[in-house]
Length: 135
Image (cartoon, rainbow, N blue to C red):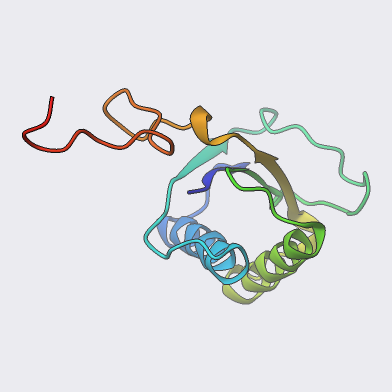
């Protein structure tokens, strides 16, 4: 059930964005045991000057191809699992988009189950939907 926001500069093709999205999803499936169809992502594209980042902080040098992934997950994962995820994502992005690992940043946030509502005004992860015929 991860929800992801992907931030990058404007100007990439629809094919690039699809491969970016698919690479993220495959990484989540491979390392976090996310079901393949459990895909909730938003891609935010920014004009020059709207995506501000240090080109050298704890990595780099970063280029104009910099991509920032914000991933919100419910169940916490241990450090080794997150490290496998970071490595898998970097490998897939390099393979599928020729994105340099230096141009990749990931932030993972965890939430509690009652902080998700997927529809109908319910805390979807803790409430069961009403059964037909029951009041």
